[in-house]
Image (cartoon, rainbow, N blue to C red):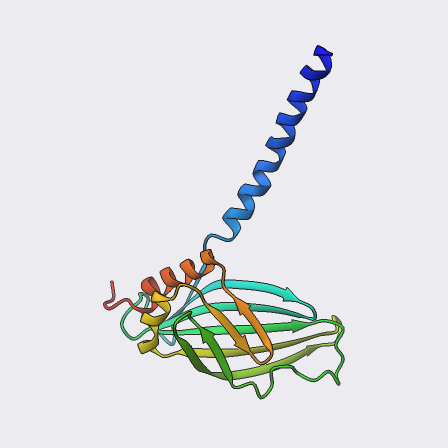
Length: 188
């Protein structure tokens, strides 16, 4: 009986260790957005991207990304913040109707406050080989509304009939992104 006990305890310990990296990875992957910076030398404009959310609620895969653009190489008081909304659906054909065409408003519920933001630059693409339809739009956030985003305890959005919510870590990443990229007041 002692030999069985000595055999089971190390197996249990090894089994617990095998779970730790997966748990650690899951926590790390949601903590902050990956920053991607692009500088256009000809236009003298920098664009910074931060992926906030990727969710799949059949049949739609939705991605939400925060972006900031500003003149020059460093964040400054001329920075603009906008969201890019991307939706993808499989099993599509050329007759598949876009779900978001004509949906000109993104509703952002910030807990105590709600913002209605105009959707612009709507595009639809169909990829025949993959049978995939892609819809993409931009939403420019008014600079006066940025403090409301910084104070938000939660953020839920509604685009057409599709809703999404940012996790606590994504909301924290968005707040840091706004403070560092969109509300900077002087160039470096």
